[in-house]
Structure formats: structure tokens, C-alpha cells
Amino acid sequence: MPDEKDNELPGDDVIDDSSDNNDPDKENIHLEVLDPDGEVNSLELAETANEIMELEKKLLDLRRERNEIYDRLLRKQADFDNYRKRAEKDKKEFQQYALADFMLELIPVLDNFERALSHSDEQSGSDYRKGVELIYKQLRDALEKKGLKAIETEGQKFDPNFHEAIAREMNDNLPENTILQELQKGYFYRDRLLRPAMVKVSHRSDAQDNYVHSGNGEDEEPFN
Image: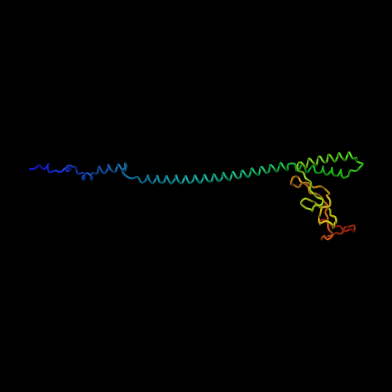
């Protein structure tokens, strides 16, 4: 009889591992490969997610703080630029008008020279008059170089901003309030008024005005 071993087909000697699939030790080994701790640690994942959220929040706060600091820096820079410009302007104005008070003190000196020249006569001597005129001209030229300028008056229209009318004279040939005579010079220092000019202005007979009766029986017209 043929031996049973002869009837065995190739491959029949392959070991059946199906029973091993239910081996609990092998299942544990498989799980340990996937998860060495034996279980998924959800608590650690939650803590990691919270840490990430906290870091993102801190990052946003830092960015917001950076933007606020940058805005404050820009405002400080703008304030400093404005302060610097104001300081430069004040310094320039101070330099320009530092001599204004000194000029104001010298104006009466010019007045005295002009009075002396207007009242001088032939008896004073031509050499004396020329000397006074020369000193007056030197002083006036020096002050004009520093910014002193006389106010225009005669023939001009009266301007209360620059002129002070202390007398009026009837004149129908000129427009109302035309300056007829300069009684005392007025001056600018650069573009600043130092002293208004005292003047006499014209008055037309057809202009409306109020007359007052003086104590000596003469009619006088006040300047309003």
C-alpha cells in the first residue's frame, strides 16, 4: 500500500497560524508597536492644544502691544517735529524782533534831529546844519539797515491801523480823509508797527459831520 506520506501534496506541511491570531501575547505586542504606552493619552493632547492656544494668544497680545508702541512712537515723533519747528520759528522771530525795543528808544532821537533841522535858520550856520544833517542821515541809514522803516503819510489815504489823526482841515479838492500833513513820523520795525504816524487829514464840506459850538463863539468840528 502506498505510504500516506507519499500522498501528501507540496505545501501541506505549511503551518496553520490561524490559531495564533487569537494569541493574546501577540496582540499585546502589536498594540505596543502602535502605542508604546498601551493607550492614546488624550489628556496630553488637550494640554498641548491649550498650550498652542495660549501661545497664539500671547503672540496676538505682543503684536497688539507692538503696534500700540509703534503708534505712540509716531505720535511722539510728530510732536517732537512740531516742537522743533515752533522752537525754530520762535528763535527766528526773537532774532528778528530782538532790536524792536531798542529801535523804539531811538525813535525820539530821530524826532529831535528832525525838529532841530526844521527850526534851524541861516543864523545857525550852514556848516552846523550840514553837520547835524550828516549825523541824522548816518543814524537813520544805520537803523534802516536793521529794519526800521518810516510809514508813508502825505497824500495817502488815512488808515487807522498805521495813522493817528489828530487834526482835520477842510479841503473840497481831495477825497475825504486824505492825509494832508505829517505831524510826527510813524515807524515799522520789519513788518511790526512800532509807532503810528500822527497826521492831519482832509475833510470835505459835503461830508456829513456834527459840529459843536465852542465857548468863544466859533464853530469847531471834532475829529471822531
